[in-house]
Image 1: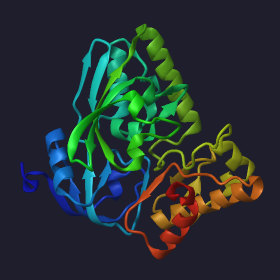
Image 2 (image 1 turned 90 degrees about the vertical axis):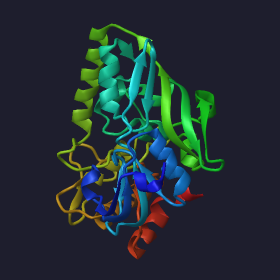
Image 3 (image 1 turned 120 degrees about the vertical axis):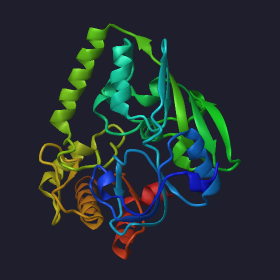
Length: 307
């Protein structure tokens, strides 16, 4: 297989592919249709950004003068008894629904998540007492150092709160195998309905473009609680504002750019730091070619993550 065999959109506007509806022009956007095409891209390209459903990212309005690989066409999954095999591009809510129809429990928390399996494993997504790492048996990974496909058991994935070995940069998730538990269909449906209702109450849906939680919860505390006590719900910039129902979400009011959001994130960060002397860590990932202003703000917001 050659690079030229894989779909590529040149000078592509990525804005409408993100849940934040923010982002500039990407020089090359690659759209692999299967794992073979994805591995070919990873072998051939020297520099790239790999994205899934673009649901927890802020993409620079300045764009990106490089290669972006979008994995959302890698949609293969299979249910074999209690085992579930999934490619990285499968959407979490779809897989949650499909396993529930098979009488399997363990993915109820994903029913309202807009992301892909790849993104959820990368961040070790969790909610309502469940996490993606609870049910993982093994992961199929691309090793950037050796350029080989390798497999790692759950114990080798270094899972923690919003953490996995994937964040260290050497490995890229291609797919995963999970082991779920049998349960009564009515119990699974009840839990999924409860999770969806809870999500509607505390998080804006995508009619209000957003990228999910802005900051991670500090140990033994809640970023939302700290932000509310620090007056976070009153904060806004020209085209972005903190959501009225929960202080740890930013919504795009219609025409926000990445500067608007980063400026608002800095206001939120500063409010909590001044009131509680706690430095919040962003959960939203900022990517793309940074302007001078964006670089200055990122040096403050992401300083702990860069150490």
